[in-house]
Length: 72
Ligand SMILES: [Zn+2]
Image (cartoon, rainbow, N blue to C red; front, side, top):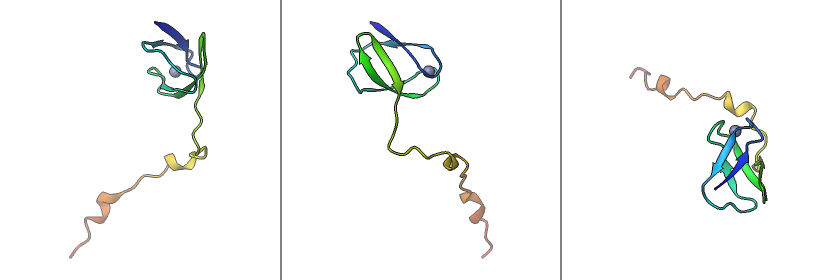
């Protein structure tokens, strides 16, 4: 079994399986999406998705429940 250090929280991630280059791993401690950039020893880096602009999208909250209340 090998270990890797999370670049985000610097926690130790236990790798129970063999990892491959480019494999995505989610840090169990900070839930950050990581990618294997080195396998011997295993080194992790942040995984970047296609969509990088998600700053504002967290703010959106849909209020579906409110509309149900419209009077007939
Ligand atoms: Zn982490």
